Amino acid sequence: MLSSGHLTADYDDDYCFRYHPNREHECKVCQKKVMGWFGLQKHMAIHNKDCHQCDLCPKRFKHAHSLSKHRDTHLEKTHACAECPKKFGSQTLLKIHMRSHERALRGRTFRCTYCGKGFYEAYTLQYHERTHRNERPFKCEICETSYGTNSSLKRHLKVVSSFTYYRLLYL
Image (cartoon, rainbow, N blue to C red; front, top):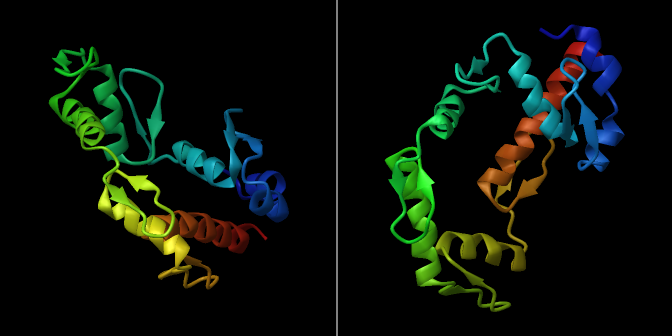
């Protein structure tokens, strides 16, 4: 478990984290190197006593579903793709892979009316066209920043809420 001084002394450079998101940071617990503040926060979760460890290798995960997905990598790869030479450890992973072949056959049939760029899925075209219209319907309640997609807002909220939380605890 982390002591309160750990984060204050080693991870409290606001400017560095906000304006150099691609900078490499070293975990002070295990010395693993990760990119950016968000990457460091995500990594630090594995040092939590509530993390989930794989029983077949040293990998650890914050969420049980992530561990479950990881376990599939240890399965014997008996599910073969009929379209290419790849094999998978489960039927579920094979189905996910098969979608890539379906998209390739269908092609980029969804075209942007502003720039003509093609997309495999209608929803990705919708996200893209929002950028042309400067639409940012997803707003952060903490800092008022707006985003074009809900997933972008969620990613931002993880960073902002973690940063705010650690600021309150350790400063």
